[in-house]
Image 1 (cartoon, one colour):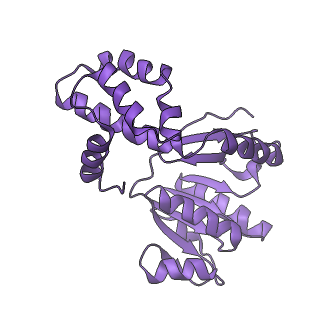
Image 2 (tube, rainbow, N blue to C red):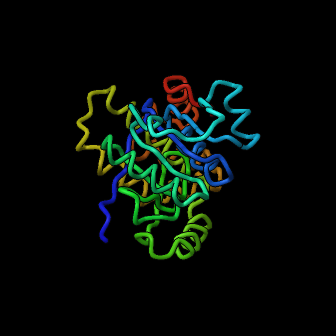
Image 3 (cartoon, one colour):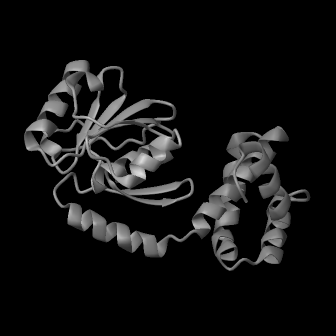
Length: 228
């Protein structure tokens, strides 16, 4: 089986998780963090999911799964330890033509979930096409050591620079050379070392006046409601 790699926009889309043990809880939180409207169905949810439901972050149905739970959903994830139930979820998803993932059962999925390294807007995924989740996990751990939180800060800064350039009517195609110069001059390393003076000197050299990291990030976070 060859899978087609894709990054899926689930912002404000209705997503269902059936099963609320440790795996189901993790799947629900990942969906939530990506902006989905999450519904969880389980007669025995974890305390963490109950807290999220109490805050209104997710919809929690503390009962057994019903076939019509998949109706009007964008995707469903089955995370129960009941093989027959998992296969029923897959059949129900097929009936209404929605995306379906059954944890650790690639043969009854129409998509599988890779191991993910997340650093802010940077997402690095590893897939073995379901052949060896253990290897995918090992590679993820190796990548987590190589790609630190400085990559999240770097992308936040690059997003702020891009927004400012666009506001000055710069052509997007012209940005490529500027961004490459910043990368080639180890902007990521400077961010990791927290060398603000050197960062601003590099921004001045490459972009000219009006590009200071403090001002860029403040403006960007005000616009996007992110925290510095």
